[in-house]
Length: 197
Image (cartoon, rainbow, N blue to C red; front, side, top):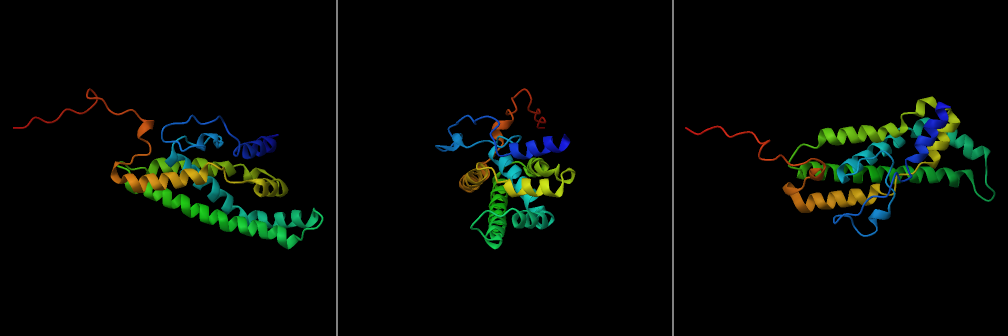
């Protein structure tokens, strides 16, 4: 039963938890993209989460490929070669590495542009994204390979990374991707200035 729950959780990553509410900063059509279940709702957090989920996927490559090859060799659709089908996975790895670099660029740009340190927030989001694959050790080789073969990066990740990097570069030091997440300190909460002599 736990394996079934883990498999369902892995499959749910690509489905929307609920549609995102459009905001003034949301580009046209972006509100229609599904939101990954459990992912942060701010651009920086989401891109960090996507980085974690994708890096977890890439880390499983060597572990799952023998079983993927066995599955692809055993269950052949007519008219396709094993080599052509396995090339798809090699192409997916290349694209995944490109996507990972794009996420790293966006994260770095946001961290450089932010007026406050974002590293701990990003590290937590990356860890949360990697947790998508936390159940992998509990699955059989065949089940893990099937989950890995059918997983795809949530569609919201790429456009959000592009937007995050663009905004960070445009706004520079005034950029704070998490500013809307925490209320600003009021005058009553601000520390009193030391009296001048």
